[in-house]
Amino acid sequence: MKVLQLARVVMVPSMLIAGSLFALSAMAAPTRGWGTIAMEGAIVETACAIDVGSQDQTVDMGVVPLGQIVRDGRGNTRPFTIQLVDCQLSAPTPAAPEWR
Image (cartoon, rainbow, N blue to C red; front, top):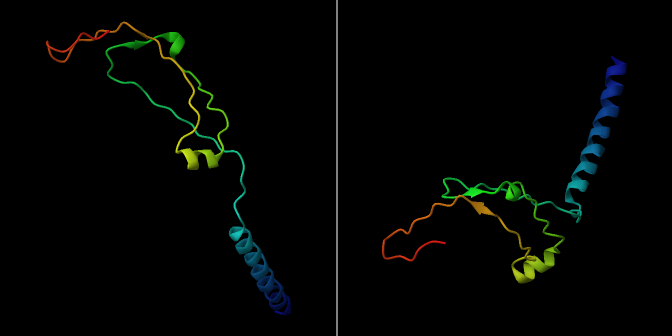
């Protein structure tokens, strides 16, 4: 019985200390570091096919400081191309210009 009471006396303060340390670490300022943004999508029900050389591209957007996005509302632009093949387009109305 004495061993059980001793364990309870030691365990409760230890739990309180551990809980306090955990609470302090939760209130600490977040670490600023690198982040990752993954963008993906699909073109569906298209009138064209995507050339094999244009499939599965990776566009390196570089490193953009958060301050620049907040200040300018956007990051840097990076040009890229998607080569379309076998396109079969038609104008929505006969009076509309031809698609090219």
